[in-house]
Amino acid sequence: MKLGDFIKDNLDAIVADWEAFARTLPAGQTMSGLALRDHSREILLSIAADMELRQSDQERVDEAQDIVATEASTTTAAAEHGALRQLAGFDLVQLFAEFRAMRASVIAFWQRSHGAEPSSSSIEEIARFNEGMDKALAQSVQRYSSEVAASREMFLAVLGHDLRGPLSGIDMSAMLLTKPGLSDAARQQAAARIKRACRGMNRLITDLLEYTRTRLGAGIPIDRTACDLGPVCEASLEDIRAGNPDQQFVQQMSGDLNLQADAARMQQALSNLLSNAVQHGSRLSPVTLTADGETDAIILKVRNSGDPIPLDALQAIFEPLVRAPNAGSEMHERSKTSLGLGLFIVREVVLAHGGSITAESSIAAGTVFTIRLPRAPDQPRVSTPLMK
Image (cartoon, rainbow, N blue to C red; front, side, top):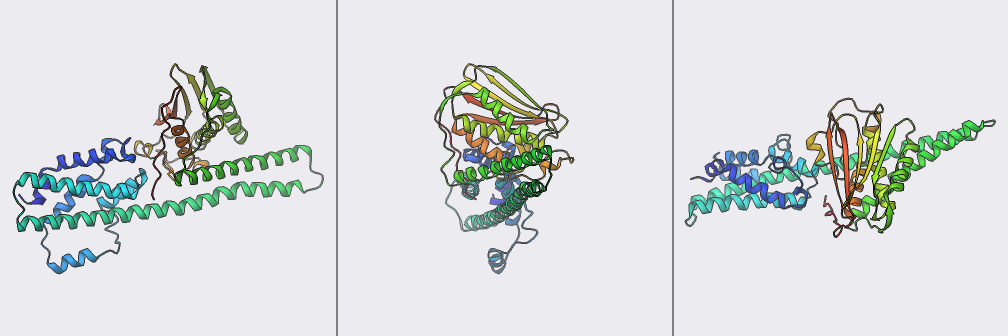
């Protein structure tokens, strides 16, 4: 049987092998089977179809040397696969590993089915298959790199926007304070605006510093002490409430909330979650923070109403520089810009405590982030630094 026909006849087994390998990669361990198999069938069928085309030696040389991106090459199944893997947090090493594993799997399956020494015709087919794999890999890497470059440009644009906003507020309030005869009430309002702007800039800069630390492989350090998460929750709420006086908040606490933790880091994580809930939630519904002390763990939940996050976007929501879209088209102005670092910092803090964090989103229940902190945690888990 020709290799192209073999691929089509054994597509399910090859794709299952692809999925099993992708699940062993750090970024694939929490992904669904559908997401792991992403575009694998289309990539293989495209390679098999190319193998059926007759090519002269010169045509094969020309195709091998064609490294200039075209519109068609950036919209293939392989290219889309690269874009989605970048969004899901795969690095280039993991992307290469996927294609290497697929190549090895196909050839191993085919050789086992032949059972004999390869003939000259089968060697030719393997060469054509390798050319197709190389082409698909090049398209995938090219699109991946393009998405990384676009995210960096967006990062800088959003950073400039988010810094300009509070700086403008500080500048206007400073000008107001220089006016003679200003009333005490107006002076207090101007000072409060400056304080809110400084608080927002400080949070932004803190996230940037933490992101840089994790990218360098150092992780987020924590200092465990005896900690009551009740006051930590209250302080986080008070911090966010001061900057969002029009937003309603609800706090619910029950059970024993004492454990060994870094209070400052947990306040940082909760403040980021609450800020995210305010940013992407509805002004008409309250943001809810609950803390339940169970026997073996403390469960923290932050809930907001509003348009749900699509299921495929939930997988990548904790990755840096990712801004998950809402399902609906009506989005509050506050949610149009975000560095995409807040939830990433939350995840790193929770992992450093040996805990876990999940996200769920639906029209009925809203968007809920759940942190589980074990009272006797195992060794802290550290996420693998991304190589983008």
